Length: 252
Image 1 (tube, rainbow, N blue to C red):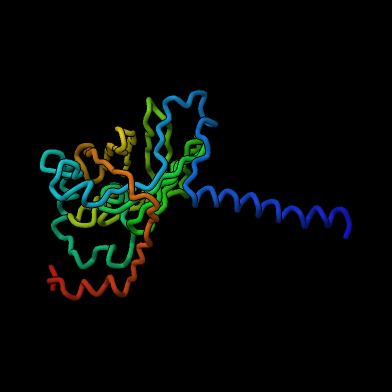
Image 2: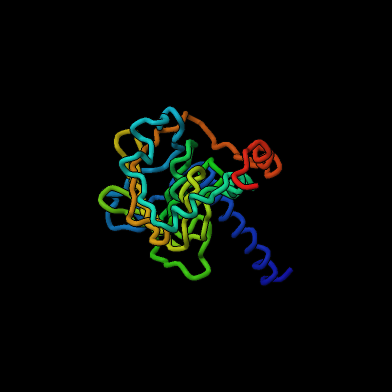
């Protein structure tokens, strides 16, 4: 084997080792120091960890529920028309289609946050979703539309500010229950910060196709139990569809 052959054999091993090390860091939840992207780390919050957003943290009708009569979005005529004809049996969730923002953030499940120099990863137990928030200044392209959109972020005065655009049309894009859709023009802005042991977030939703004005809510997570690992959601479309058989159809 010549020198070039040795070089070619070494390259795959090297890249495999680097990749394995990176995946190991991600799996362990160890953040790469985020100071690499900023001259000052004093205002970068530590968001790393597994966070509990379940019923004990946000009890039904409690103070940390997202939407109340006081802040529920003001719908336009188009949204009201969609809501009027919506049939629960047609909800995409019964085909295991994942939730998107803003429902993904307030559904009562755990999530995990990992901070890297160029990105922040949000992994949600709900629907096994993974969101990437890019911190490196990149901008979306026309090919970046997806159900979770395209997220960019920056650190600002001790918080993480995230802006997400480039969503797909979603017939239940507001949430899984109210029959309110969202459009490709939806924009979601999130601000995350720490208050003691709590992780808090204010989310602002804009969608000129369906909302008359922006709508916001603030909620929280608490640290998950020590050693907790996110559980697989494991949605089975056949099982999920069985619930539809017991629904009273809106149309015959």
